[in-house]
Every structure is written in C-alpha cells, then in structure tokens.
Amino acid sequence: MNDQKDNASLVKELMFQLTVTKAMLKTVELDQILYIILSGITHGDGLNFNRAVLFLAWDRRNELRVSRSAGPANGEEAHRIWESITAEKLNLQNLIDRYTQTPDELQYLTSRLLSFSLKLDEARPMESLEGMHYELRDVISHCVATKQPFLINGVEAVYHDVASSDLLTFKNFACVPIILNNEVLGIILTDNYFNSRIINREELRGLSLVANLASIALERALLYRRLTEMAQVDGLTGVFNRHYYERHLHDEFIRSRRLNRSLCMIVFDIDLFKRFNDTFGHECGDRVLKEFAQILKTNTRVEDMVARYGGEEFVVLLTGEHTPEDALATGEKLRRIIATSAFSGFEAGQITASAGVSFVRPEEDFAQLFTRADQALYDAKRAGRNCVRLYSNA
Image 1 (cartoon, rainbow, N blue to C red):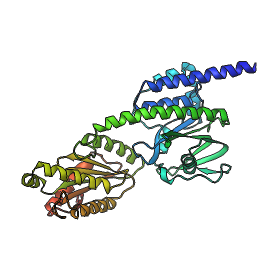
Image 2: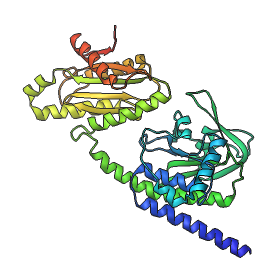
Image 3: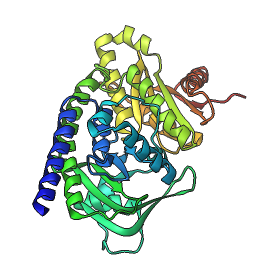
Image 4: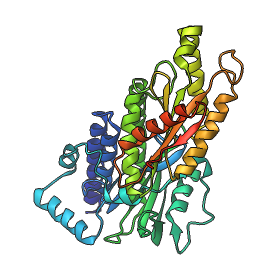
C-alpha cells in the first residue's frame, strides 16, 4: 500500500516537473515565466501552497523587489478560488494556458509589497531560525545572505505596508533563493496562511526544484531582454532612448500612485549646442554628447533612469521618495559637475547646461511631468542659461 502511495507521489511529481518545464521552454517573456512558476507553486497538481511571492533583482540590478505574486486576499476569496478550480476541473496545464499579459493589473500581494526593497549587498543572516516572531525583511535578507532554502512553521513573519500602514502577515512559510552563476537573482516566498498546513522537507525540496528550473528559464529571459534592450538604448550615448523612457515612466507612475508619492523629473539641455556643432563640427559634438550622458549616468543612482530624449536634450527620472526640493538639489549638483568638467579637450566651463525640474502628485496626470519640466527648462534658458529652475504654476 505504501509502495503504491510512493509511486503515485512520484508520478505526480514527475508530471508536475514536466508540465512546468515544457511551459517555461515555450517562452522567453519574463512575466509569463513568473506566472508559470507561481501557478506550479500554488496549484493542487503542483506544490499546493496557499500563496507565493517572487522577488527579483532584475531591472534594479542590486535591489530586490516584488515582481509577481499569486494568492487570495482573504479566506473567503481562497475558498471561492478553490471552488472555481474544482468546478471547472482546472488542472495545472489548463491554468498555465490561461495566461494573459495584463501589465497594469497588480496582484493583491504584489500591491501590498510594492514598497519592499532590499539591497543585495546589505543582506545579512539572522542569528537564529527559532524565534517567536520575524520581520519579513529579515527573512528575505537571511535567504539572500545564506543562499539556502529554509522553512518555518507555526511562527509569523510580518511586513509593515508603508502605503496603508497595515500589517501583511505570513505563516507556515518557506523561502528559497533563485541562484544564477552563484549570484542571487531572486527569492521565492510561499506560505499556508489560510489552511495553516504544515510545510515539510519534501515540499521544501520541491520548491528548490522549482527555483532551479526558474533560474534556467530566467537566464534565457535575461539574455532575450538584453538583446531587446539593445534596441532601447541610444546608439550614440549609451543611455536609454526616448521609447524606453516613455514605457518606464508609465511603470514608475503606477508605482508612485500606489505608494501615494510624487514623481520627479529633471530635463537637461546643453547650452548653445547648435552653435557649438556649427563651429567645431558634428564629430566633436558627438563626443560631447557621449561625455555629457556619461556624467549624468555616473552621478545618479542606479535606480534612477537617464535617457536621451532627443538631440542634446536628456531626461533624468528620479525614482523613490523625492520631494521637489530634493530633485532641485540633484539637478543643481549635476549642473555644477557639468559646468566644471572639461569636455573632449575643451576647458572647464565651455560646455554648460540648463535644466528644468518638475513633479506630479499621485492624483495628477503623469503626462504633465515632462511638459512641466520642459516649461521649467525654458525658464532656465530665459534666466541666462547654465542654471536650474523648478516648475511653478504661479
């Protein structure tokens, strides 16, 4: 009898592995890969966890953030989802096939964890896994630092949601690293909050298997994205182009609205660049554009975005919690560095730039961000160039 159970479990595990592996091999789209991973973790034909969250250090490179999640908001929704799956006889393959890309739709757990971030080089192991209470940040940090999977039953891990001041609680949870080339690319967090089912070592092994499959699929997606990004980078200056900037701006606005904070931007324009080009030639002008872009890129944070908007005009999109005054100070710092730099053999001070700083509040139209910055830039030009102005509707 036990042999029959063992054989049935083995067959189920192999079918699960085959379904997930085949689905991952069919796509190089990041969001779809994440959907497949989460479906396998939470579906009854897979690992059957109540909830799962994927944190990735992807666009942010050194910063871990929530990327996608699966799981209900409460017990009633959990029951409703289970009844629906049972009624439709929705197996894992059917669920995977239902994938549709909805970039503006946030999953419940994702929306509650948008303010979470962890610098990978700041990750530290916990002293003990036998505590009576944990902070979610410490749990994720431990997994990053040790690069080892672990599970904790009967104890809660909580996250303080900055946007709502509410607590998000995980219980009977497991944490598994996604490792690529011996570096942590992401973290899988799962729990059984609603049914309080105890997690065992076999299930942790299953999660580790999913993480290994995920690392292979994500490597392929990463290579594909790098090729795609080549079309998103300005060929001359090496910073992002206008197309990528516009797409990224939309994503950041969604995040800023969810976190109820303003979004800030600085637009730079090289002073009298046309006259410079006419006098010294376009080849010299191109060298100045390259050096100018690198000054902006080198002197801004990794999480901020520098893009060439067109011609000699560049955009710096500031992410995170910035006030207009913070953005103005950043703009002034960059302007000063530019004014004291010797470009392409020219003396310091021969190349200067003007800048306009703007912001939009969460309830405002994000399309106004560039319009306002451009207006502030015009004010800087009128003020004599080589200065920074903050947008004002007064």
